[in-house]
Every structure is written in C-alpha cells, then in structure tokens.
Amino acid sequence: MSKDTVLVVEDDQLLREVIEDLLHIHKIKVKTVGDSSEANDWLEEYIPGLIICDLFLPTVSGIQWLNSVSEGLVANKSSIILLSADHERTHEMLVGSPIQSLVKHQLKKPFKNDELVRLIRFFRPNS
Amino acid sequence: MNELHPLLATLVEEFLNERNKVRDATSVPLDVPLDVTHIQLSQNTKHLLLQINAHLTYDHFVSSVLEHELRTPLAGIVSTVQLLQAQLEAHEAELPDTLQKWCDRLEKLSTRMEFLLENMKQLHNNNYSSASAGKQTRKLTNWLINERKSLGELIKSSQILDLKLQMLDESFEYTTDYHLLSIILGTLVENASKYSPDKARMDILLEQSQEILRLKVIDNGVGLGANSSVHLIKAFQRGQEVEHIEGSGLGLSIAHAAAQRIQAQLVLYDNENAPGTTAELILSNNDICQKTLF
Image (cartoon, rainbow over all chains, first blue to last red; front, side, top):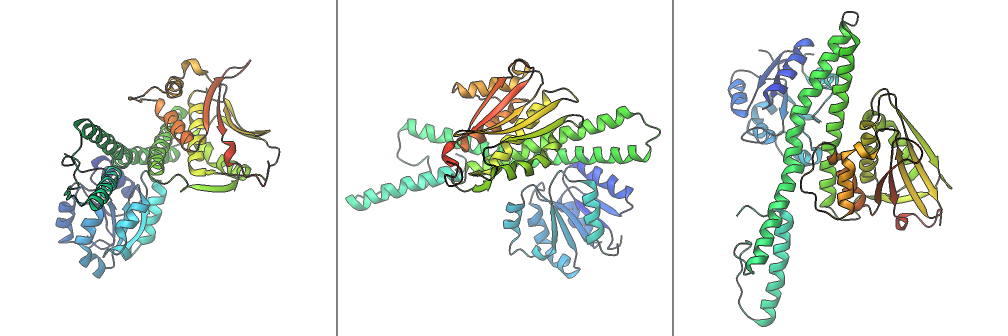
C-alpha cells in the first residue's frame, strides 16, 4: 500500500466499518485497525500519509500510542486527525508531545461524513 | 480504597493543613498520611467521606468517560444515517418517501442524543468551576436572536419555532453564564418539540415586566399530564432525592440543575384556555445590570 492509504485506528468495530464504507464510496484507500498493537504490525510494512486515530484505545490513549511511533511519523511527515470528544483535554495532552505538529485537526464524534471526507482529501498526500 | 476524587483529595489536604497548623501551635507531633482510610476520624465521618468519594467518582465516570464512550456508537449511527441519505438521494425516484422520513427521524434523534451528552459534560465541567467562571454581560435580545438559529436543529422538521420579544428596552444587558442559559433554553425547546405533534407551533417568549425577566417556551402539545419529565421537576421542587433518572427526565433534570446554578427558577404549567405547556425560566433580578434598566 502506498502513502495515500489512510490508516484508521478506532476500537469500535461498527464505527470502523462505517468509516471504511464511507471511504470506499469516495474511492479513498483505507486500512482500519482496532488497537495499537494491530496498528504497530501494519506500520512495520507500510507508511500512511494520514492517520485517523481515536483518542481512547483499549490499552493506551491514542496520543500515547502516536507518541510511541512518532519517530517514523515525523520522518515521513504523516498527518494525523484525532477523533476526540473533548478538545480542551486533548489539547492539554498534546502540548509538547512529539506528534503535536503532525496533528492537523481534532474531529468531534459524531461527525459529518462530508466533513471527514473533506479533511482527508485536504490532508492526505497525493490527493 | 479507590483513589480519591480530586475534589475530595483537596478537601482532605485542607483538613491535614489545618491539623498541621494545630500541631505547630501545640508542638504535638502528628503524622497523618494523605489517605482517608488512615486519618483519625470517627467511623461515621470516614463512612461519609467514602460515600462522597463513591458519588464523585461515579459522577466523573458518567460525565467524562461514559460521555465519550457513548459518542462512539452515536457517531456510527449518525454516519450510517448520512450514508443512507446519500444513497436515497442517488436513487430518489425509486425509493418511497417513508424511507426518507425515517432517515430524518433518526437524524433528529441522534441530534437530541448528542445535545444531551454535550449538556451533561458542560454541566459537569461547570459544577467543578468557580461560580463566576462562566459569567458574561451581554445584550440578552442579541443572544436570543443568535440562539434561535441553532434551536431549529432540535425540533421536528415540520414544526415551527417562533421568537417573540416583549422587552421594555431591547438594548438592556444581563449578566449570567450564557452557556448554561443555552443549555436550559435548548433543553426546553427540545422537550417542547418532543411532546408536540408534527406541524405544531412553539413560541419562545422573552418577557420583561417591571423588575422580572421571563424566558418562556410555549407549546401546544400534550400538556403536563402525559409528560413524565414534569414529575421529575416536581420531585426536585419538593426537595425529594431523585436517584434514578430515565428517559425523557434526563433533559429536564439537566435544565433544572443548570437553572439552579444561575440562580434562576424553572416552572412548568399547563396553558390557560389552550392545549399544551409553558416552561418558564424566571431569571434572577440580581444579575440585571442596573445601569441599563433599573
């Protein structure tokens, strides 16, 4: 998979499927995973141009996980969209973190499909 | 025991500081760790603190963790409805209007649920901030006209929401927490819509008479008898403890809590000589800017 694939890290299976359907309709390449471990496995072989990540994952927070893989993401200038309900708290967690400059947008759940697609098209490379 | 809730931990710390002052003053050594289970308190006090801690911890869980977690399935529902609607629009000629109507209904229900979740969180955040933190002085009429734009999202698409201003002075300013006022008004409009039929009309009336300011949401729906939420409000007014809130009660209980927070009074009554209900918010006279009106 090339850099124009969007990696979606979301622990809720049904929401993952909905996002996957939405992106397929809009002909956007997508890989969905349910937790950080699955995401790490995928990142060993591929480099995403854009990651959409839920703030709360099963074992670590989305930001903790992103920080743990920040070296590769920073080197490849990947963009990140966070799915978050509390922008203030997310902002506090982000300040000073290695991935701060990569986070382009925080999208609140529930979101408008059009808005998500628009953001992906804007921040995904080669689009 | 479980970790202490931040508010209770602060209280315990204060308590320990006080004791340390006593120790310094009396030169009696007193080594008390920051753990409520080890503090030398009576069994009753300790039991009470543990109960408060359990309540605070649950409150925190409901308003932050649960609020976030509920947003995830809600996001799935909302996005699926949008996908369905997009498909319907693409095949407009082949599908019946009923499907479109059901999609619209699902969308409205999702909006209501999101509204409740957001209000729960905002009220929780407000409860743990200082009383004056969210206060602003604004022209009330401007605020209401602005609010009117977003209130349309909370009613059924066939219903009509009209805004009427009966102000002695439309430029007069009012000091309050406008975020909480938005929560109250939104909840009352949403509640009125829920208990009113399709194509019904609802009025928002801002009324200024002498020294009293009233914000009314008037509907021509089913009236108080069929509205279970009202029993909840009545229970609050009687000072009864309401431990279990379900269904439609949640919205009004949030509105009631927010009204208390801004020192306003929320009352509901049947309309005179007409069907439906009036929800009336009586705002505290203390917060009206003297320079502009009285």
